[in-house]
Image (tube, rainbow, N blue to C red):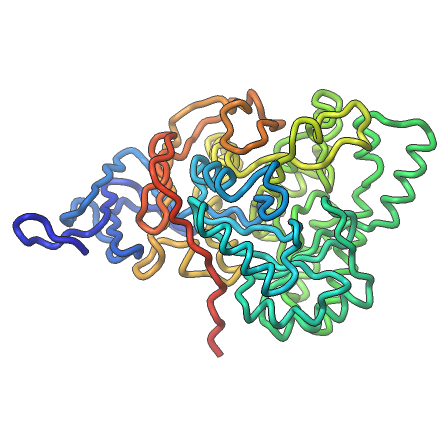
Length: 460
């Protein structure tokens, strides 16, 4: 807390006149942030002397948006992205906290590699971040030490990975789940059955298929559904907290719905591309630009994911932000093209457009993009909510502002998105991380002040 020239104490930031949005209600309020924390929430009209006052009249004030699935490519793959460029994209897009994936070089597989990544990210990130540790066939004995070192959770690639990390076999996955359960952390899986995919890929290649739709045909919904079912079966004896990353199919939605009905600690996320795009139409039009693992499927799968969002089966929306170079990505032979594209900067405007279109309410958006991700990864109520004592993370939005997504304007090193040219309505206008204004009306105004966030220990 600072003092002005007449000795009156000043807080760091006051946001007044906006409509505060939680997962259950909306109310006009004034929010006071000091020393990185929310110190007061009061009725509109109440004032505090502050270093900076934001007049949020006509705007909605959300808890800081969380993207629980990004690949910022550092260390080792920074020609694609790094924590500087990736986190600037996050801040520009209204995201205040990201969770970074471990398939980098070296992979985040032990406390030494975790420390290296944290040091690199801390020096250049514009948003706060958590780090996922990878589980490989060779590091099962590192699961406990990774928890002690501060990973926010774990990831197992049940199928092919970008970067070629080896997948644990079924016995190793079961042992890993047993060990993870003892840490109290959550383990996420990239759920695809590699044997099914390898068989179909070989068959399609032998038929001479190199067209974009061959990729979709090589990774059918059953490949995801089988892996999801197998992961749930494996976690059940230990009640390991299990998360399904980037879920793409109606079959997987049904399996997770049953698991939740049975009381199992299973969660899942989906992504904007699975909700908003048709894979057949998109791959035909965009070619390898839309290549993603799992693939974007047909509309019936998207509709099932929407139903899952509405009924609570699907817990979160993340992006699987996965940038690559133009040379890696754009290939006439679909098998030679790499899978993935950036998403962290387009997440908020795309989903606010769905709010304006009536597919999602603002309170539901806060549930699946703020509160639930924070709860899943053990950082609630530090993150994911607006309450006294929580971090001063805010995403202030203007539901009336219209724009067009332009790939060339993305802050990522990768200027490739299947949403290029999409008209959006609803834009982030301020991104605030622990009281620090990082983005204001589309311009990055802060300096890299992002901090590493460890999970909050569970109360016994």
